[in-house]
Amino acid sequence: MEVSLREPKEIMKLSKLGCFHQSKLSFLRSFLKEFKNWKYSRDLFDLDENGYGRAVYSFSKNKRIYSLICFANKIDDNERSDRVIATKWDAAFTLHDGIPAKKDLDRLSNNVPKQEVGRMSYKELTLSRANKSVRIFNHVVECLSNGEQPDKHKISEVGYLYRTTAVYGSGKFGLADRFRIKDRNEIFGPFRLEMMLVYLVRQFTFDQVNHIAKNRNPKKAITLDKNICRNLGIGNSTGLGMAPFIVNHPTLLNNWITARETILKQIREIENVDVKSQDIFKTCLKKSLKNVSSWSTESDFQKKKIINLSKDLNKFLKFLDESNVFEKNYAFNEVYLWCEKNLNDECIEYVVSMMMEPFDNIVDPHINKMSSDEDKYFTIPTNRTVEDLRTILEQKYSDILKIDFSKKNSNKNFWFISKNKEEPRLADRYIDKGSELEQPLAIARDICLLYSRISNTKNSLKIGRFLLENNDLRHIIRRVFITEKFPYAEIQDNTIGSELMAIDMLRLKLSFFGALKFDPRSDKWLRISMFQGAPLPQDLKSFDEHWIYNSLN
Image (cartoon, rainbow, N blue to C red; front, top):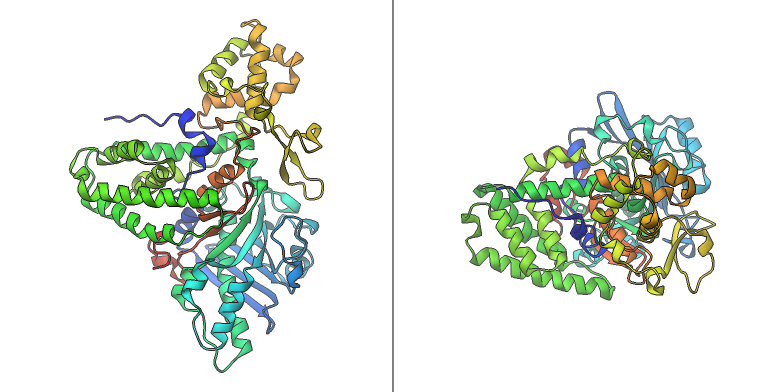
């Protein structure tokens, strides 16, 4: 039996993409799998009694070494902010290529804590900063210094000691350009170095609380229990800066979605699902319920999604218990079709992620197909014709062509770049000033404009000739020809309309990172947890690959 890939017009709607969950494809999980046999080391730990100073952690294999350099800084409470306009943080980090010499540490100590204002070199690969979750951090230090473990319930409400507010890479602020390192096999998967940085930062947070507690009460202090450590992740506070990424990298987006959709198709095509695979699927599903029940948020939008997800998961579990679905041929196809008929998108995509868990043989070959050399597809085929363009638009963008951009609601928002931090922002076209500085992220509007422009143009006219009179649409013509080859390259929605929920764009990207417990703080920014439940560095050689469902056990 052959199953069709799900249609881009169905999958690439923001309301659907905003329901994606982490899976075995997620970058943090594939990172741990790739680096499980590397040697981990804490090479330097020079903190004062209050936990301020520098530390270095590394992964090494053969002659390759990656070193995380940490700078823990003293700041006042009123200086602590997760907003991008902040200038001071509790800690700042960079991932260094190789072993840092003392002169590197001294150079970086003057630059890394300054973040955007500082200057990195080609030796540095990624850059980040983080703030304490002060209430939880202080609670843990206080308990440990008194010889007690912290209250598990209290720390599970937050799930981390620190949260990052940005992780930079690929040439920003002097960091190494991607071309220098892109051919290294161990980091071929997307964002692998960023995942390494966050993972090692997590270990630093545990070492720091233990160190402060020990200095506060040397005779009585104990260290944080390893099971509690495993159940703490690293938080992240993410705003609109992440949203344009999925618009600006169409072939990369396509490769992420294609991997996921192809894996789903191949799983649905398995004729006989063996008992071991059934058991892994059911076990992960049932364990994952703890992650859902401990998912805390003050967002009414997200609360509603969590309630519906819980109801649907209970309905799904009842279906699995009462049906004999795994006695049938093509059982996972039956499971998927039942989900489509009976569940909401949030739960459907949750189950899709769960279906991947038993099938390393299907998932693993796709992990290294998720990068993209986008320059290869940048050139516009100027020898093609307007007829070709019209055909692609009508076939690939039929839903977008139905949007009426003469209506105010269709044009409500515009994207711009902030002056101070050069970060993407969203504004109301009819209230805020600055729409003349709009960024080219209104893809649906520009698609409709292009279609209107070619309506009275000869089919035989070459694209090169058309561009002479329509250079303002060059960016959108390029996208159309990319989408011809890459069906999942385009969001099939209006990114400037009144109904836009920008956090759907954030959640899509974060699900591929491997984030848990999305906590929207508005429709434009959210907090998440990463690596919650993950093995500690010393346990990597023999860890459970389904660790993410052991969280809070």
